[in-house]
Length: 119
Image (cartoon, rainbow, N blue to C red):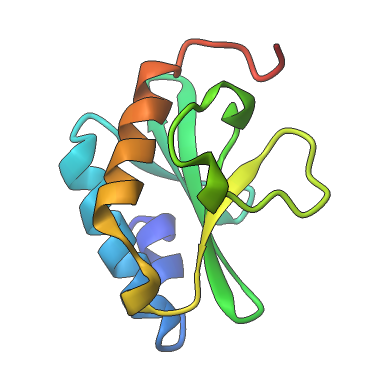
């Protein structure tokens, strides 16, 4: 089994369900994205470029975006928490996930995938 998938399946509920839902939405929205296991968390790449990562921490799941300063949609939903480069969408439950917002952000991340991490 892919270590990234193993990471997802080993999480306790409700985080496993959140991660599985996010995995389906990401893979449906960006079918060319490849799920890898980097830095001990699941990360989606297109070619050699990272698109986003999934991380269960404390009582939430983050979908983190590296080149977040280039993102232009739904910025009001991002969490930064003292991070300079990475911003994330944060979910505490399945009902917190707005698929429309997530899909819009994923498409935006795909559109800016070739931009450098820093402006």
